[in-house]
Length: 132
Image 1 (tube, rainbow, N blue to C red):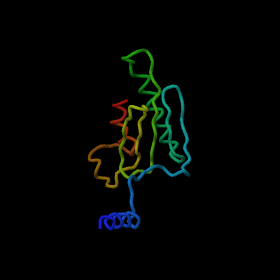
Image 2 (image 1 turned 90 degrees about the vertical axis):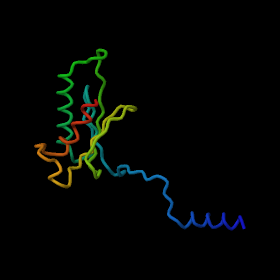
Image 3 (image 1 turned 60 degrees about the horizontal axis):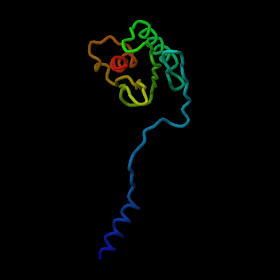
Image 4 (image 1 turned 90 degrees about the horizontal axis):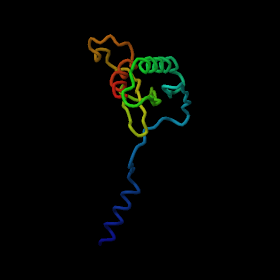
């Protein structure tokens, strides 16, 4: 009788679509580009070159204005721009140290309230740049 229970569980696992973890990565066919200088490395998919240039220039300007408080050297910042997620957001990872911006504009134009920010880059830049 106990073998019947194991058999039923085994058959359930075979017939049922089991998913342990879904890895929501980018497609393998995605062509990546980068802007690399002494302050920042911006990694982005092909097609958003102007946004990547804008982000790189802003980080360069911030690095030129910001005084270095700990030590005398500024580490290079890695920023990954993603344009395929569903929600506009961003995060900073400590190990490996990098920042990711999810560049999807909000679906409702009234979500931004009275902000005069023009695009998703402006919306996602506020929090991660403060953490960097």
